[in-house]
Image (cartoon, rainbow, N blue to C red):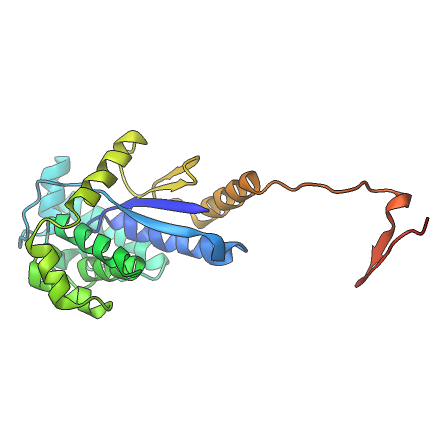
Length: 237
């Protein structure tokens, strides 16, 4: 089973959705046969590479609300994040462009470290107040998850993985995705938003059942024998 997740490093709901999905996956009995792929998405492609503007000010301008209302929005999402074990510090967030962060995640995928890189970048942004648009910060974070820092620096200095980033964005358009997080399961089931864990459980079970239908062999009845405990009785002709 393949699960593609469109997400942005600067999306607070994406981190919450990641945790809720992970909780569902942990209880899914076929979890070892699930491939999770992180896809790129940018909520604000025009964001500066790095900025010291407070997130409450950014939200107030984006949604046309007061700074106080924006701060209340941040407090609400922080409370929900805490419910799944995340420690948000929205007041310390440094508004950043996430283009290079996404390219770094593609580099990590090349080394089978995609999930680790995604997790580290989200924590850096929402908990540690790191600028995920700053090259040296990204190089440092890459090294922490096991990527050679010089390789990371070389990638970020050029255009490597730009095509992969743009392919993810185009694939999102094909699926009609207009917001994140978005979870696509086997290209048949789509889950939009940071849904409760129970929703993810139901979708995983349903998708698995559809792709692995139960095929009955034989028929139930007196001619089929019976099983008791560890033993099955086979009728003799």
